[in-house]
Image 1: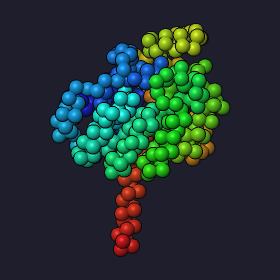
Image 2: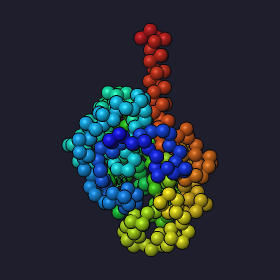
Image 3: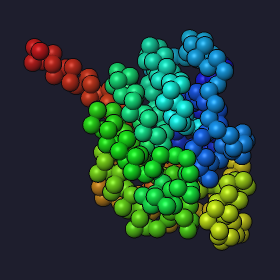
Image 4: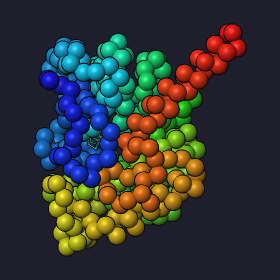
Length: 304
Ligand code: SF4
């Protein structure tokens, strides 16, 4: 296939995602998050629409079973600023709807709100990534991505328009956005905005992102921590299990207290850190389908 790929991140045994395809209308990413792992293999470049992307997608879709889960996107944002006028993600969604696919969107952008008309007709769910409520930290960490407030607003908007929505608190970086009270406040803000699921994970270092973070926060302790305590797992440096569990515990505990589903991404921390039918939020797509079906059958029963 030309643009659709089976999602299988470096064949990691820690990945708990259901079978799905990943799809990237753009190469590069104009959000320029310091922790981005994609830069380690494609470099740090702004979002550029892929050449003849929609033609390639049309051909690929003929080879894929209807009802497959397709995620936009796993290593670039499908809603960079140029999407506002290029409308490549929007045209992609139209094609996926026509071919009967299920859609999972992962983005940091409120631009996704524009496409609720298509999403409301598509079995779909949206995951909005928010790493901190601290605007100053976010400006350093994700310099060209929408503000945390705008992302919360996107959650609110999607919820109000009946689109299942969750959030990614991802990555949690020691010394940067790991304050337990701030993480609990973040979970509260996300739940209050209307999210029904959270997935979280710790920062898995790569050489280039670790250098960017250390320089931006003028702090050498992060690099020392990963170099001294970290172990290489499928090309990334992971902190020891107990350290990762400590970093993520506030998110898990608060999400459970608030009564929403919560999971971790590629952590291998066991069921205490995995309280959801899926990690990536794809279970919300089924929830929505069920709800639509039950509304339909209620209509039939009442003779409406
Ligand atoms: S939005 Fe995602 S893909 Fe884009 S720079 Fe940030 S982490 Fe990388």
